[in-house]
Amino acid sequence: MDVLVCVKRVPAVGSEILLTADATAIDTRHLGFTIGPHEECAVEEAVRIAERTGGSAGVLTVGPPEADEQLRYAMSMGADHAVRVDDPVADPDPETTAAAITAALRGLPPDVVLFGEASADAGHAQVGFRVACALRRPVVGGVKGIGLDGDRVTLRCDAPDGVEVHEAPLPAVAAVLEGLNLPRYPTIKGRLRAKKATVRVIAPDLSTGRLRTLRLRHRPEARAETVVLGRGAAAAPAVVDVLADLGMVR
Amino acid sequence: MVLTVIERNGDGTPTAESAEVLAAARDLAEQLGVPVAAVAVGDAGDLPDDLAKRGVAQLHLLQHALLADGSPSCTGEALSQLVAAQRPAAVLAPGTDRSTEAMAWAAAELGVPLATACTEIRPGIRPGEPWEVTRERSGGILLEDAVLDAPIRLATVRPGAPVPSETAAAHEVTVHVLVPDLDASVPRARLVDRRPRAAGMTLTTAPVVVAGGRGVGGADGDAVLEELAGLVGGAVGCSRVATNNGWRPHADQVGLTGTRISPDLYVACGISGATQHWVGCMNARSILAVNTDPEAPMVTRATWAVIGDVHEVLPAVIAELRRRSGR
Ligand SMILES: Cc1cc2nc3c(=O)[nH]c(=O)nc-3n(C[C@H](O)[C@H](O)[C@H](O)COP(=O)(O)OP(=O)(O)OC[C@H]3O[C@@H](n4cnc5c(N)ncnc54)[C@H](O)[C@@H]3O)c2cc1C
Ligand SMILES: Nc1ncnc2c1ncn2[C@@H]1O[C@H](COP(=O)(O)O)[C@@H](O)[C@H]1O
Image (cartoon, rainbow over all chains, first blue to last red; front, top):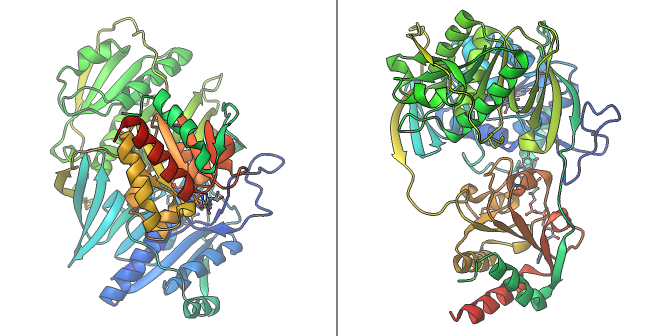
């Protein structure tokens, strides 16, 4: 079984986010980069499926050369090949991303293509569905469990009122959520292998989509000053006073 | 027209999120001077009467056996056919997972952009001029102003938008049925099983959530969280550090890739308040932070804080609670 995972290089922001002077992007001069947790689980799942079925686990990204770092991270987790669709734009719009992935997939027909439910930075929550539509593949989103059964795949999701199980013929597409599994940490051996592995680069013709970022903004925050109730165990009576005021002491 | 996607409750009425979108659609339609239309799957039922009070002039019902599952590819394809026929100025849908997925499929079929999680939609002044939207990125960590440049503007509206209380002047709602021509050659996913969730308090329904992070220091440290939550009638949550270390199941994780909650009180124990955690709890009515670091972002943003070690503070709070309630 061949599985391919689409991952995006995103800034690993902490508790404060700085924007560039023109406010069109996050100032990443002092930041590291990562892939989102949903995608990390997708990579883990792909590696497990490949191990179980004797197939392959590939990773693909659309982005600039720096995004090879994230492909190598996925390879250090056990992915066995990587493709980068070259795009100088760090945060392409979802139409462009989907078109780039669709073009790349025409040359690599995996049995299962995995996406994250939403990218960690832009969060458009649409690239996987656009690709599935373009390729005319079955797709399920919000996936928290994947089972393989011959030429079919079962996909388990949390719905607002319970759990749903979907079944799709292969080849299929799924957008997955963190919680699907507990991703492994890369081993030293895995890191060394990934360092030496090659990333295949392709450069299809891409036109830009029609959702264009003008500026990023911080959300207005209206919080009063914090009331410090005290230090250590001595603060307990004050804490219980607060709980009592809120009607929580029964 | 502004076309509004209606999700329905089990009894056929519009969901709360759909009511929010209808309010946003009415606002937009007024600015554009066009009518509001709605689209829903299934039979009319009481929907026309209900929508009349919400200012809707036309209701389009999508009817097809394949739509019963709620499959986004089928709904998306049906929606794209309705949109291609009606050419609305805009299509607004609730920002729920299901509607977002259907809208993404429809946008791909129609070859148009889609702006998700919008908090504001600003139409161009002249016809054909690009529109602007404000959308939430990363679950609301940042806001993004973006240009949406297309002949038909597709957008999903972030849940939680305010709904005006007064209803619009009642309209006569005309009902139109569309039986979409769903492409039989497209392989689809099928819903094969649906199991209802076990009853009981969840992170999203609990009035109080007591959550632990790295500062709690491991699965053994969680006993005090459980005990405190039990005493105040709440649920236990955690940060991603706790989940990644296997201290708690992912279902308990609060944050961007976990659950977004809005309890009356959030008690954050040994949690620093990284942006990705903060978006999960920022809608709490109040926050109590327990942290050794007075400068931790969770502390500086909290309503109340206790500076100290969770392993000293929580047992003391539990003892005081028991003393006062005589338990
Ligand atoms: C794309 C992405 C998505 C993410 N999604 C999520 C998400 O959904 N949810 C989430 O939680 N995180 C998420 N994260 C991770 C997030 O960035 C932080 O790493 C995480 O929230 C930190 O968890 P923490 O606060 O428990 O740990 P830390 O940041 O290490 O903070 C520990 C805190 O405990 C305090 N402390 C230490 N010892 C004690 C003690 N004995 N008593 C009291 N206080 C003590 C410290 O002062 C510190 O403030 C995501 C990250 C990325 C990149
Ligand atoms: N630049 C990219 N390269 C590869 N995959 C991407 C890229 N952007 C988004 N994706 C994939 O599409 C999913 C949904 O992204 P989005 O629609 O932006 O929320 C992500 O979780 C990734 O799996």
